[in-house]
Length: 234
Image (cartoon, rainbow, N blue to C red; front, side, top):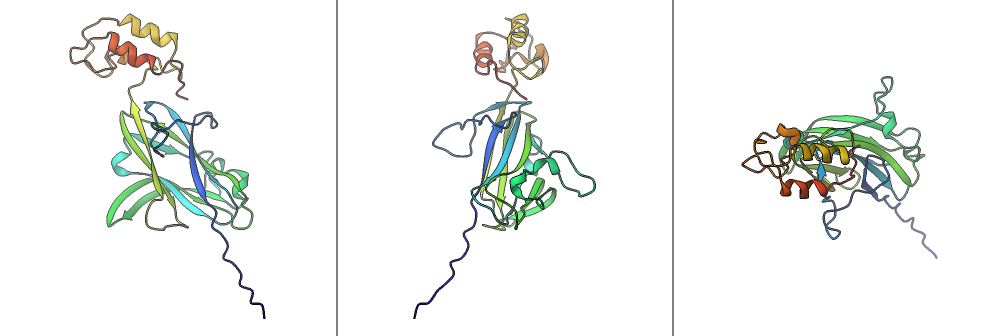
């Protein structure tokens, strides 16, 4: 007599990918062999973090920034819906009609350590979600430093993060804040060339990129500037 046993349904694998502000150009890793640690970006740079899945089915999770890092980076939702209380612009059709994105504010306890968190919780549609891009949030680099963004897959583990993405922020080269590093910024660097009084972070339009202790703007600053030539921040 044949005995039929139903196999348990496989859990969809849910991932994140990080793109520039256009939502399609991937942000490179600092080292291709090390996942989730991304190349340095300038203060003021906007990124997109997309949550996608290789299958349908119910899922819930979150992206958060813990209190110790909230001065360095921030997550933003899209198109808040006052009637439903969720960020409707941060969910894609593949997540299902009943999917929702909620602002996440509160305390999370991980390994007996309490963290005040800011971020977003994602709830998929159990009946209608299909494989594809499910959710999207925006990220902004606020200040020089490193900001981990914590990813929770609460289907896999309700208490611990699945992984964290690490973003390092450096001083901007977009001196005029027009969203791109170009000849206008080069002209600003040139107008301060060989000055020796650029000591404060924002003095001389921020052109003392190497933080030279004598306030000197020179070849070291030019080399740092060139690393981000024609890079867009938004």
